[in-house]
Length: 178
Image (tube, rainbow, N blue to C red; front, side):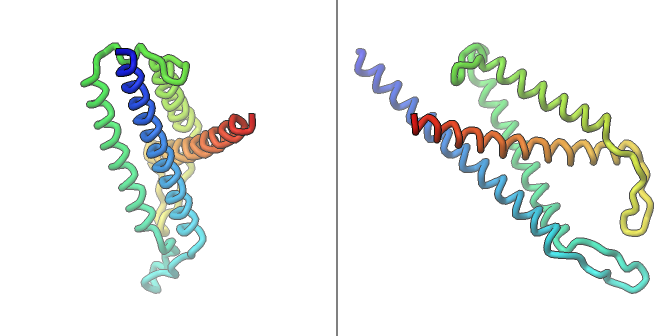
């Protein structure tokens, strides 16, 4: 009986390790793709304009940036919905357990709370200065604040993800050397 339990536990541990590796790999790939697309967007250059009357100065890879962003948003929404459905199918007591020595409910509340605080602060302190987009003034304050909120929140979360990857890498190096 005890041998079966140990075997079952080792399978769970192997499964969690595989999920962790897949999760880390996918996060690193998404961050790499994001950095690559943004770097190409800013570094490749601009079109001089299609006609002589407007002379719009538009980045060449605007379509690629928008498509990548839409794909990430749709993928994220799909993963969130899948995760919620999977979690609801589990029992309600699943949130009472521990993950790496920290209560799951505490992890959830800190994550949601941090996201809400970041979004509220970036919305509150977002710029409402008028912008000139394709030689036309844009001054809708709500839309400007919302756009600023999403851009700022995205940047902060990307920086947080990069810091988490570096911290995890350093922790593993230190643990390996000890």
